[in-house]
Image 1 (cartoon, one colour):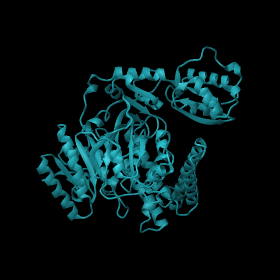
Image 2 (spheres, rainbow, N blue to C red):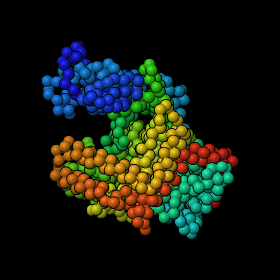
Image 3 (cartoon, rainbow, N blue to C red):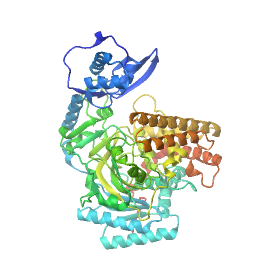
Image 4 (cartoon, rainbow, N blue to C red):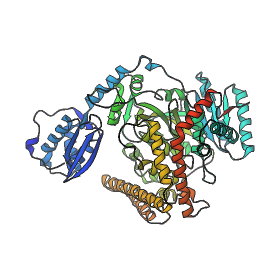
Length: 629
C-alpha cells in the first residue's frame, strides 16, 4: 500500500474480527489514484493505487492485523509501514469496502429466517437423460445401473436418450435395445434420434421459431466434428419445466464420497472446489474409493433449484455454513440487510457431481493445481509423470458447495430447467465450458452447486494421454475457446437486465462479430487470443515465483509449456481452430469460425422465442423424444 503518515492510524485494541474484500469495481483516475466502488453497499472512494491493490488482495477472511502483515509482504513494503497499513485497512472496513465475517453470518441467518415455510420440501428430479452416439453397448450397461438404482430408492423417473448417431440402422438398434429395457424393467423410456428431432424442428418452425436457427441448435453444422452441444440443446427443450440429471454414456451409477468429507455447506469464490487424486491405472483408482448404494438423485436435489436461503436451511441453518471462501457477490442474492444495497433472488440452477475413473478431458491441465491437490501431484516425479500419462483420477469436492464461478463439467450434471436456461454451443468439445460462461454472463444470480460424490466414469476402451498431449493446449486453440473469448467480450450496458435481455444482447454482439469483414474478425480473434495467452503466461510466472521453481521437474514443464505457447502465438495459423482444420486450410477454418460465431449469436438471441414455442408445443403433447415400444 501507499506510504502513509502513521497519524492516520485509528487507535484502539487489536480486533479479532475477520474481513475480506467486498465485491468491488475499480477504475484508474491517473495521478496514481483509483476510483473504487463497492457493489455491496454503493460506497465509492478515491484511493492511492497501491491501497486499491492491497484491498483487492484481501480475498479471504482474516483479521486486519494479519491482512496488514500479508499486504506488507505481498507489496514489499518496509515493515515500519505496518501501523499505517493497518490503519488504512480499518478505514476501508469502516467504509464497507472490506466485508466482515460477522456481517456475512448475520446476513445468512437473516436469509434463513426469510426462507419460506415450504423450504424443506424437495421438488424431485423427474428425468435422467443420456446423450449418445454409436455406443449402444456402453449405454445399455450404464442405463441398467441407473434404472436399478432408481428402483431401489422408489424413483419413478423417466429415462431419456438423445442420440445423434448418423446411421439409421444404428438408430433403430438403439430403439430396439431400449424397447427391451422397457419391457424388462417396466420403466418409462423415451428416445430421440435424427428422425424424432427433425419432426420436432419442423413443429417448432410451424409454431413460429426461426427454422434455420432451430436447425443449428439441434443439428449443428455438417463436417464440423462432434455435436455434443446440439444433443444437449435437444435435452433442454425436451425437459423444459423439469429438473433433470444428465449423464454421459460412459457414466455408471456407482459413486463414492470424498475421501476427506466435511459437514455443512460451503460458499466458494473460485471456479471449482474439487480436489484431485491421481492414479496410475483404473484398478488403482477403483481400489482407492468405496462405492455407495445411496440415492444419487437425492444428492443433487439437496441443492438443485433451491434459493440460497432455502439451501442454507436444508443443511442445518447459518451455523452449518462455511464462509471461509465466500464470494461477496452472494450477499446480493440474500435478503437485504444493509440500507441501500441492491438485492436479487439467487438460486442454484446447475449441480455437478465429481468423477472417479477416466478424467473426461482432452489433455491434462494439472500445471496450476494448488493446495493439497498439488501436494499429491508433486509427491514424487513418478507420481507426477503418471498423472500426465494416465487418465485415471478422483476429482470431487470435499463438501456440498455453492459457487459463483463459471466452471461446468457435464459428466453427471443436474439442470433446473423450470426457468430459462441458455443454449449450448452445438459444435465440438468443451460445450459445457461454454455453457458455464454463458450462464455466468446471462444469469448472474444463478449458481453452481457441487455434490461431494464422485460418479464412476468408465469408458470400456483403454484411454491414455500421449506425451505430446501435455503441450496440445498451448500449441493451438479450439473453436469452443474462441466462442468463449467472444462471449467474454460483450457488455450489457447500464442498469439491471434479466436473463432474456442478456441472451439477446449477447447474441447481437456475436452476430455483429460474425458480420465483420473477415480481416477485421481475424484481427479481433488474434488480439483476444494474445491477451488470453498473456494472462496464462503471467499465471505461470506467478506460480514459479510462489513455489520457488520447485520441484525441478514441474518447473521445467511449466517453462516448456510457456515456450510452446509463445511460439504458437507467433504462427499465422494460431487463430485457426484445430478442431475445424480437418479437411480445411487455415483460412477456411477461420472463415468457418466466423460463421459459427454469427450462428451462435443468432441462436442466443432467438433462444427465448424457441423456448416459448417449445412450451406451447409441450402443452399440446408434442415433445422432442418419443416413448419407445
